[in-house]
Length: 67
Image 1 (cartoon, helix red, strand yellow):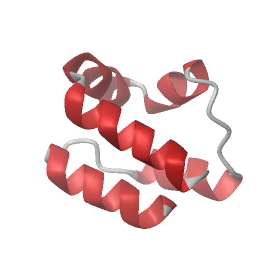
Image 2 (cartoon, helix red, strand yellow):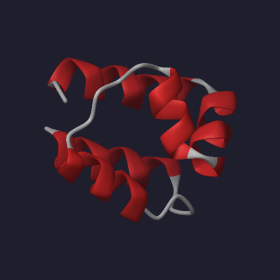
Image 3 (cartoon, helix red, strand yellow):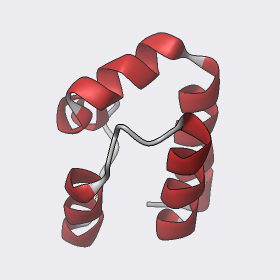
């Protein structure tokens, strides 16, 4: 995934409460709906993510992993 794509996801996460809620409920469906192509390694990381962390902690973790 490109840094630009990660940036868009993080921006959407921070500014769209509906997106945050949907991603917490079913991250795989949300990513597929957005037509974002993830590598197998990125899918594994996404599925292992603790979606109960704070928004800030999740943003930092996602940015660190995907950048």
